[in-house]
Image (cartoon, rainbow, N blue to C red; front, side):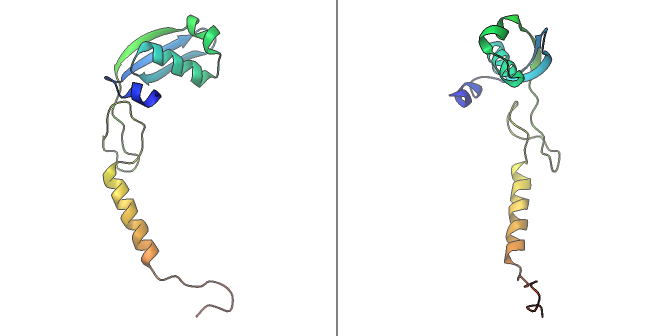
Length: 111
């Protein structure tokens, strides 16, 4: 259910402030869901702490960057990961490593 809400509409960047917990920046679809995510991140009780939060809209969320090559990919607000091109390269490397002949490193079994 939460994933469906995040995919509806543009993802914005919000700054949520609470006097006791401080400031945090959240990527979210709406200000209400940003407050909910911030309270969840702080580990506080939603019912008592949400009313004390103030929300400031910072703009649109940035597109994620690949951790390997640095290229932007995906939609704004998505989680940072590895781009599809780098995933393909990693999979090819794994297959090549798996296809190499293995040597037995146990004592007495070495050639």
